[in-house]
Amino acid sequence: MTWIVVLQILAAAALGAAVGVERELSSQPAGLRTHMLVALGAALFTLAGADITRGDPTRVAAQVVTGIGFLGGGAIVRYGATTRGLTTAASLWVTAAIGLAVGLEAWLAATLTTGIALLVLYAIRRIEQDYLPSRRRMEATLTLERGAQLDHVERAASEALPDSRVVRVSYTDSGQALVMVARLKRGESLGGLGERLRELPGVAGVDLAP
Image 1 (tube, rainbow, N blue to C red):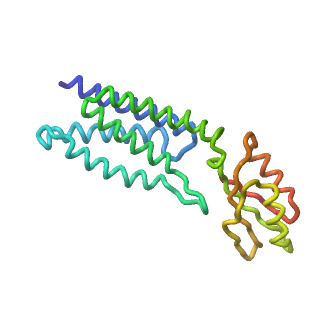
Image 2: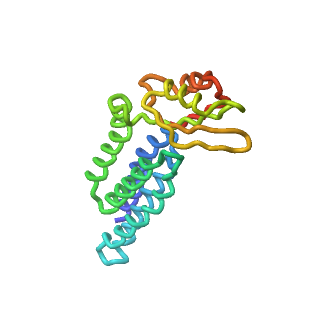
Image 3: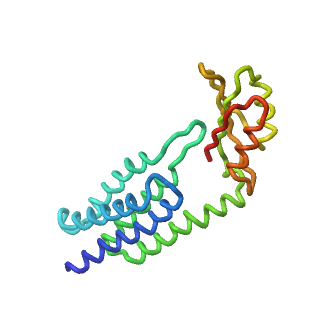
């Protein structure tokens, strides 16, 4: 019936928006609009597949699952020693599954999955930050002043950054740079840490990436 199709489309948009809002608030590249469109597209492919394949929408749904992998891959970016976007890629994958469930009229599964996804994205993230210190990793790039001794700066930076290690040293025409991966102390802001590193002898500039 037409009204059921309309309800499915609206429900897919709403559930996708619920996940997208959390990603938007977390300043992720794939936010509200992207998640809404993924859920809408997955639902529509499923609905259309029911007609094309004569009542077997799962055949089209399987192709949607494969296709969403390419979109999720675009959200994953490698920054030096760290990788970003894995959670956003996973949220896109889950959002596609929610859209598929709506297209199959699996209302309880779609709604429950949306709620659990929001719980994982928000509540579990807080638990990671508060109780799993190994997850609070960040990358610090220290640009050295001309004439500064690299080993002296490395020693001072290692004392300022707990549980840190050097992952890259670069030499350019403009000077030297030291890249380290470290654990951010609980309750310490990036701004405060940046000021502390900037005051180290021989450091000309600091770039921090959580």
